[in-house]
Length: 154
Image (cartoon, rainbow, N blue to C red; front, side, top):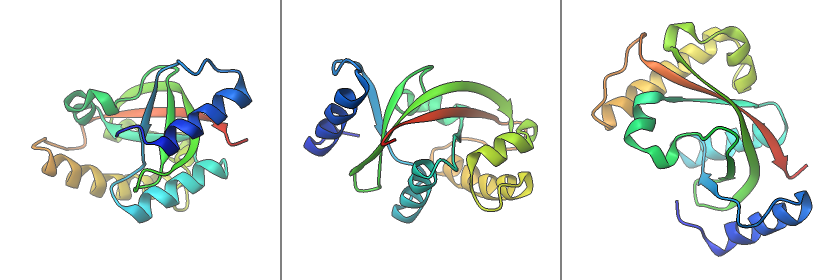
């Protein structure tokens, strides 16, 4: 995603508030694949209910600019590119889909936060994403399980 003037200004505000060097590199992205999903999931982050997210390792390998970076900063936007918050990656684990556990599902903060809900929603999401990108997806596919901290706004 390109750095808009709004994202640049938001990053500068974060750096001023946190003492972070404005030259520090960061990623710009949104959650999900629709405007509604991007907004809903970002709101869960801002409310501190969502502290984790998942992506397909194979998708990340195909799109390294979107892959999480250990301790990396990200400006999270809505689907239209408006900045909403800054997070920092705290942990990255790669697990087969079937080994993602209930605690991680809970930390994703979505739906009823159960593992069953997580598996259902992510099975559908990853199946569609894989098909759109010429990838295979099954229960053994590696999932990038990322935990993060909300840094801004506080």
